[in-house]
Amino acid sequence: MTEISASMVMKLRKMSGQGMMDCKKALEESDGDVEKAIDILRKKGLATLAKRAERETSEGVVVSKRRKDGKVAAMATLCCETDFVARSADFVAAAETLADYALACPADEGVENVLGTSVGGKKFSDILAEIASKTGEKIQVEDYAKYKLDGAGLISIYIHFNSKVGTMVQIETSDEQVATAESLKQTAADIAMHITATKPLALDKDGVSAETIEREKAIFAEQIKNKPANIIDKIIEGKMKKFFAENCLVEQQFVKDDSKTVTQVLDEAAKGAGGAAKIKRFVRFEIG
Image (cartoon, rainbow, N blue to C red; front, top):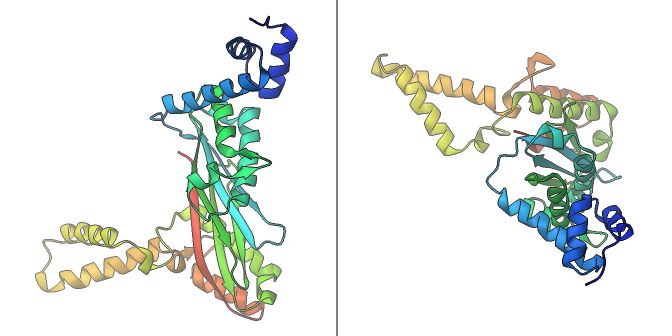
């Protein structure tokens, strides 16, 4: 059996970032073969992930990245169990790397696609296994979305200062001149911030699920069951109109000026830039 020297352990530690004892054990198991030892450490990380699969990951960060031309942008969340790990250098580095993988991922959604994406010959699933081995916690990519412009428009991203909640919104414009206007860029950023703050259920009422609508109607019906039967439907209709106005982005009162709706604010900004604009879609991620 190969004698495991301190220099061999230090070499593996520098390569893997794992603890001294873990490195020594891996080298002993691999009979001094560094590459095999690295594989052993990775498998240990995967085992940790599997062992803690049911644990809650209520800490972490929202990350994002956009292509230099602004035509493609991605956002994802990297989650862990404790705030202590979320603030660690290894976790922060992994989160920054996740942003690169999210932008490089060929699919527009699906966490499994990010995990399988390879950058520089390394999959992000390998990075997860490594950090899980280092921290002993469950680490996972919980959310992922990627937007691509298929015409004139812009993608705006807002991530709150605590990095625990963020929004990505895509806006279509009548032409590139409108999309590149500074006033519209600012309005798009404000709308992204608005979404982060207000948590809209959908873009418009067509995006609200039938189940949600029926549930709300049932709640309203119970609230007014003692009213005269001939006015119940009208009251429910009025309450649903208010529900859509409060929960659908395009109808919501704008947080920076509640005398206007989000649609009115966007329309004014686009008109000022010499054209028109509308929100195509948005996604909002929150940790915990």
